[in-house]
Length: 122
Image (tube, rainbow, N blue to C red; front, side):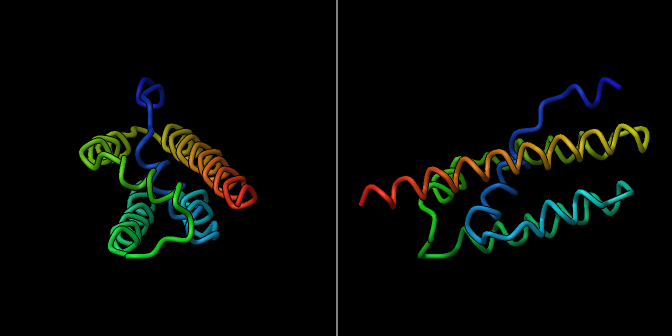
């Protein structure tokens, strides 16, 4: 299971930005219930589509989410997608998906909490 030992950073960050800006957990919920590789990749594709749409917005509610979005390296997203596509078993895929969604939720909490702290200071 060497595949699962690889680090996933960029896809969780994409999901975290979407959660922090929209305040909706749809992306991690859908991904968390994906039971196949093709469904996992499909849900990530949906999230990436919405992420690209979000990047084109002029006004963001969460400035920290915007900063995080601009730091995401899409070439690493592609590498992480390749890692997912190489998962050799359902157990390995579930481990990868669980890691990605857990990291996304942790990062989203950080982005949301930081934004709320900044608003309270004003």
